[in-house]
Each structure stands twice: as C-alpha cells, then as structure tokens.
Length: 159
Image (cartoon, rainbow, N blue to C red; front, side):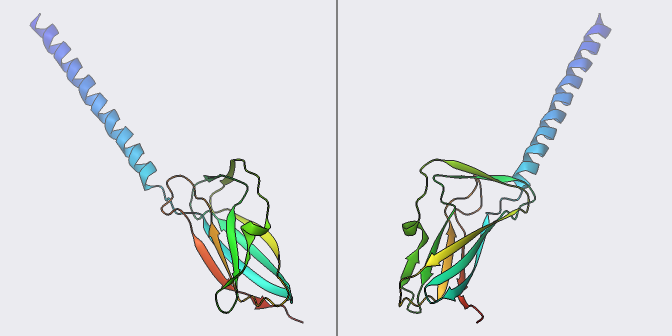
C-alpha cells in the first residue's frame, strides 16, 4: 500500500513537471512572435515634370519585414501625395483630385514585397512644382509607427 502511494505521488509529480515544460514551450513560442519584426510599410516617391503642366510620379509601398502583413484601409486610398512649389505652398493634393470608394479594403503584402503606383498629376498653368511628399494613410496592426513619409524633388524631363 505504501508503494502504491509513492507511485501515485511520483506520477503526479511527473505530470506537474511535464505541464510546466509545456508552459515554457508556449512562452517560448509567444516570445518568438513578439520578436517578429513589426517594421511599418515604407513609402518612397520619384517624380518627373514631363510638360509645363504635367508631372509623372511613381509611389512605392514596401513591406520591409521577413513575414507577410495585411494593411486594412478605411477606403481605396493607399497614400496621400502633395506637390509643393519653391515657397512650400501646396499646388496639388492627390486626395482632392481623386474619388475613392468608401469601403474597407485589405491589401496583403508578402515578405519584402513592393507595390508600385503610377500617378499623372495635372497642374494649373503657371504653377511651379518643386517637391513631392507622400505619406502612408494606414499601417498594419502592431506596426511600430502609424504612418511613414517620403519627399523627393521633381526632376525635369530630358528634352
């Protein structure tokens, strides 16, 4: 009878120790997920003035992470773009010239994936465009910052 109690006690002790080992493994998996990079979607822009009133801009959104992320946008607008003159006055705002659907959209990004958007900007005669600035309008959940920004000078087209 005494041996039975000892055996039961040993079995109970093994079960408790085995459970503790599983908790440690679970915490380890949790720490791995927390160590996952949460770098925000980056944005970049290049722009070239092709005529006196037309600029062609290329906006790139890139996932710098080694894992896939999904960005959920409140509308179809993926970024904001502003063109400024030499006095830093706004001469064009992308969102004022576009129509966006008012539906929630989710856009998946594969690891290191880059998405490119081409935009033709029509200026008013006499506007002197100098610089383009772009800003992300949304990030994925848990990104380290809510938005990223980039600025570029507008180059002149080669004649």
